[in-house]
Image (cartoon, rainbow, N blue to C red):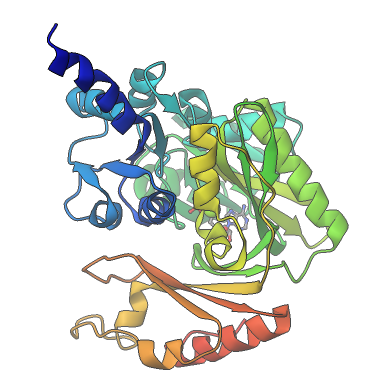
Length: 399
Ligand code: ADP
Ligand code: MG
């Protein structure tokens, strides 16, 4: 072996130690890239799309399918640890990486979270209450559904997001039609439509040693199945309920031996009951305010978990309201044919405590997440007041 080759080995491994990889190229990956680069890690992004939000920020992009063996091999060679920003990465791809790099989250947890029926089974097995539900995978399942699930919401087990892959069903006859025609006979779950008082989420991080920290409980308002805004601290729950939600999220993480950042969405019903809705094995839209309102963001927690770095409890230093900027805002009401125009950034940025995040997406489309605005302030009332002003500027309803 030549001296040159011997010297090259430690250099290559030193480079690898400073590089981390992300499977997925959306805005969650982009914000992860920003957090990791700030702390001095290089980031490789694996994304099949061209010029995606994360790729624009990455140190290096591997443009390939998530199950491309050469790309996965390159990721394992070039990075010390790999994470995901997208729960629909094939579990087999994660399996291919496991053992070669530190992987957070690991394949078994992603396998549960990417499938609603498995996820609900995990809630039940962990003793965490969720909506009454039935699994619909074949014709015969339709007749077996109990009356208590009507009216209900039928959801595809896989690949649903932002209210996509869902439809309301009033009775058994509409269930059959919805399942066959609207959702194409795909594996689904039917759950009872619930009287929801408010929606909340807990973002936690769990390390390889089992240590857990979490962001403050977030209160989320959805419109048309898409997250519209998040308030933190949550205005409509007491401290005991917040503690209960954190404990439930921790129980779910623990029972999956989870390592990484996990978000659990909850419903609080009109009668006060708390139900788990769904989990995301990654940072979550509802945790974006942590970038500007907490001393440790959900993306820094993601980096820390994947590298086995210490987890410290994030401290919220400002009250915050986060408004999602959907592509609808680029179009005059009712005229999605007209050329899109940007919202009035100057007026929005004139508001105190405004933090603008744009995801670098070229094409606005109704329902597409183009960015978000977080308003921070000394008190929740002030954060809400400025966010309400912003909502008026944007033409969004009050909350
Ligand atoms: P997604 O993966 O699209 O976020 P969710 O299951 O979280 O799917 O549903 C999106 C939103 O739809 C929820 O945040 C909630 O506002 C509403 N929703 C979902 N399930 C129910 C239900 N069973 N009853 C009433 N509203 C629901
Ligand atoms: Mg959801």
